[in-house]
Image 1 (cartoon, one colour):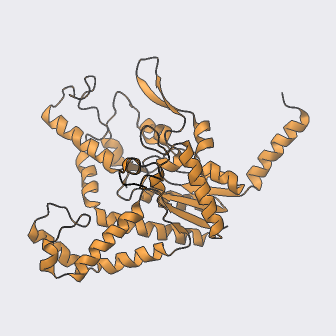
Image 2 (cartoon, one colour):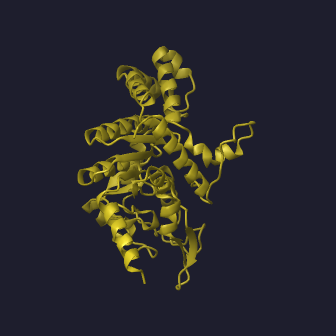
Image 3 (spheres, helix red, strand yellow):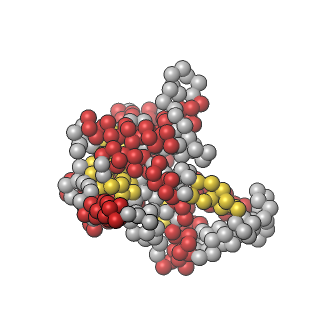
Length: 369
């Protein structure tokens, strides 16, 4: 039992936090959520295994909390695992319409991720499985759902390349062996998938959402977020956590090559990012002609340079701290930045500490706060 003065201190501290303590808003994907921190596999009494999470441990050890402590602020973390940059922009805007914050740090995620509205049609086509039979349980996102704003329910579903690839593999297996047990898991039935009734729609979203346009959106989302914060008079820092800005440099280089070349020369040249490697010459010619006519190079360049020169943007290669590519690089000195990662590739506790220290240093150096 607390002493009277301890009770008073406890109440007064909560009152200060609720009424006066400045708030740090953070948003991003599973990296900012703190994925894999405090997680472990647990066996249910029914016999199946599931991933459990000590959310208090996760909260205390992720970079958003560590940075908030350095800034003497209350951490507000509205990140969600698997979320896209569309979600980050949308959810940040929704939060600021209802809440006041004194500073914000946004972690941009992988640009190819996308969102699909959870509409009546989506609900009607969603398929229950033996693992998750209730739609609301699925929509909550489990341990990777958002914690600090609006609960875990959102009006959109979240998709990335890996999930789309898994769905496509599932559909191919199902066509080959309808209604049978899968080859890769003897206990799983091939029809055990939530999206079996809407695979064509989801694949259509993925195919139309190609690389160039994803990175156009990535740059525009950062400028949208900046303008949003400016309108609410919130100082802010936006960081590139998954090498999106590096990819923008490669794409800009290829767009500049197309712009500078004749159509005949550019059709014969090999490109990595702006066109499929197996594209046929006729379609390639039409596509490159359209790149020129629509002035993609100048538009992309304007967006890129606006972000690159911004005081509020930090293009530091954060991913190198936890990337397997950095760790395994054979070139001398190239893996010096690697710190560590969790079993499924997310940054470990030491990385989160380094993130917070780096961001705090940049906030002070740039006089953002």
